Image (cartoon, rainbow, N blue to C red):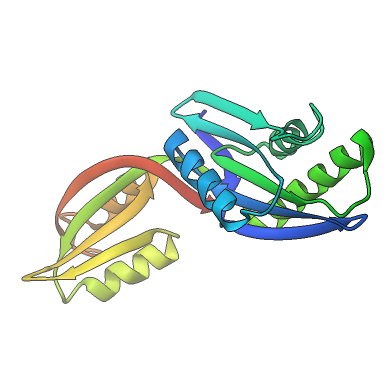
Length: 213
């Protein structure tokens, strides 16, 4: 799976159904540790809630991990609808936790499924969807004279500069896909046109998120 969809931002949204409040917290995650930390964070925040139901799907370089929890709700009424919503939207590296505060009126199994599905759907809409693929974080050295050219190039080509250090030359960390890296180096290294990159170093492979078309 070279490319797939995920969310742009972590968000919190809320719906109400027959006085029950459903708070959906959506997270971008890449590891099980990040999932567990997010669940702990939400349970601590909503410590007085009876149910914190969740589902996630993680793509670990082609290895798909998925799980859900009803957290005390009737089987199949909470975690499974959340997971189905993630799958229906073709999303990966996403965790949705829906916290429920009971309002005193029983919703029934159908009502619970609809409410958890609606809460999860609303959280995805609020978070926004982007495309993601494996790429790289690289470090490049550039002269002060060429720095504005580099910024213009990256902005024009939707490439993120994540860190800048001002030393003898300017050292930038950049996140980009494999195709973008090859184009950047081809366009700008050892050429009279564009920006003259003095040197570069691939720091690590990582997922890169881009706004979906």
